[in-house]
Length: 203
Image (cartoon, rainbow, N blue to C red; front, side, top):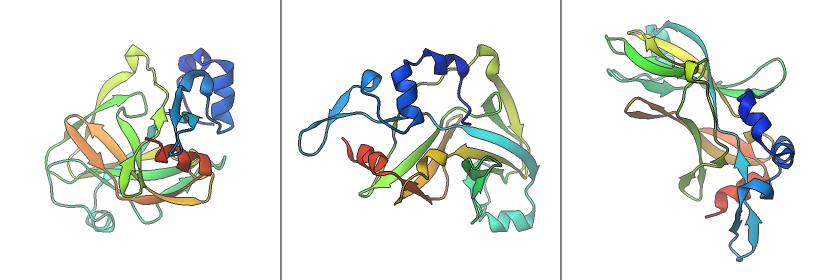
């Protein structure tokens, strides 16, 4: 089951909760937009993306080569070729490696077991677009500062299971805002539904 803030979940109207659970747009809270023919369409919303941290480890020469790591003092996002993983319940994630190939430790602002500022961008007709998302809320005690040691990595599993329910292949990448840095992962391919594809084509 997807992890979302409990307080926010119960704040949603029942019609909205049902619409998200079954992959349908919610006209009750989302407002409307127009398609290319000028017809009014309900806006489509997704839950905001989350990245769940799994482990830290040493960035060995073999792993750095497999991830195509570059010599740098900044954080990098990388993936292995088999980056798509599933848990025991069949929920799909994309596993991203956050690398610190430099000689100094780097701070990372955290929120519980996740990271703020994670989003997914999808390539549609040569443009990178994101879905409209519901807001997130966190407890004030959730925020703390982590450290990524020198020459090390941290893996994070980013929720993508709602983007593999269809058959339309769509390039996607993870974007993370860490401090003043905006980091992008390599591109992987999702499988969107017709409704999701239509939503990305809306202005």
